[in-house]
Image (cartoon, rainbow, N blue to C red; front, top):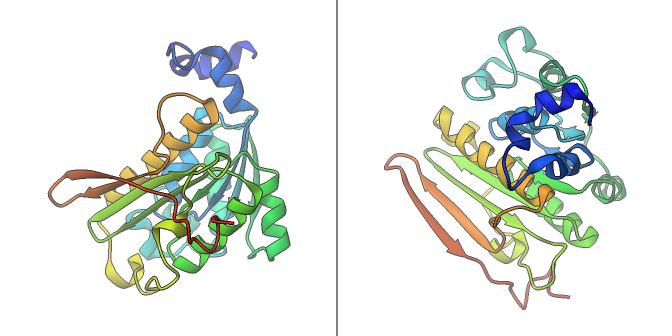
Length: 247
């Protein structure tokens, strides 16, 4: 690490659980982030600021006025831009030394597997079950850790699925394929800071996995009732009949 990096990441390095070695791990890591909306916005910013060496940002949408209530990585001047372009510019301004790759078209199944195979960790910040199921299945196939989050109305949840470890449940163990596609922010609304809280936890859990520090949310589901500011934690078990990971 050079002098500028030592200064930039000094608040990480002085943590005994991190140190120079932990920061080096982060600088050598590659994270694949799906979704640059309310959850993906703080995730991308915190990973870029923290020094994740390479970020691949995936989103197929463009910035709209209604996004700006919560998607803090975009600004008014970005309306009409592809979200990946707007996010890349914001992250690069924050930390110009990291590598940022963007994907603005939906990858075909083999392309998705290739993207995941080249990454150390995948973060799901999408807002629909079909994308979540597809990402989970690909991560299980590639044995890649997956950090999953969701937020709607005034409720949020986060979990980590260590597909690289034996006997770890996957996202499909938690949810069947009968999830309601209408459960999105655009249909139901969401309180702006909620997505910031959940996205920040996703970024934190990703960094812990990459640095191999602490106890992450593997096999646990953390649930937030933001209206009453109450947290719950549920243990998750591997489903022996799961169609994705039981084989």
